[in-house]
Length: 88
Image 1 (tube, one colour):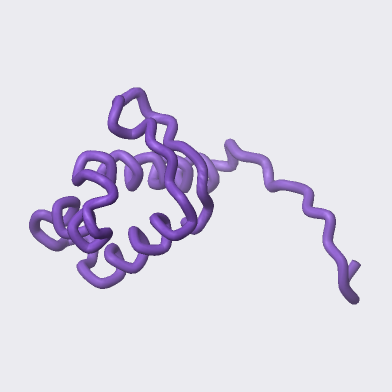
Image 2 (cartoon, rainbow, N blue to C red; image 1 turned 90 degrees about the vertical axis):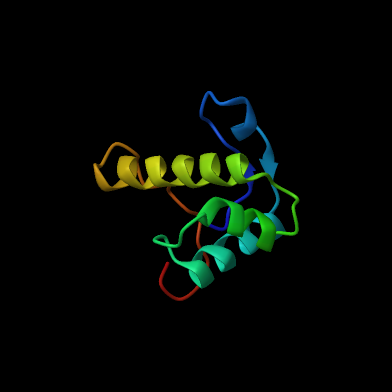
């Protein structure tokens, strides 16, 4: 969940770019509050200092959840990394 980039859903509020710092704040707030917390998106947005709205936070989470589902379903190919080190 720590990558930057833009969201892909059709909602206008999900078209914003997320920095690495914003993603880290998002992840930390999700870990702190937990997915079952009431008013989760409002709490996460507030924990992020208001740099994203509750709707942007919800859309970002949905986009990431959709990505995980695609990966788990085998619909996303694993990238071929150029690695260095003793294992190559």
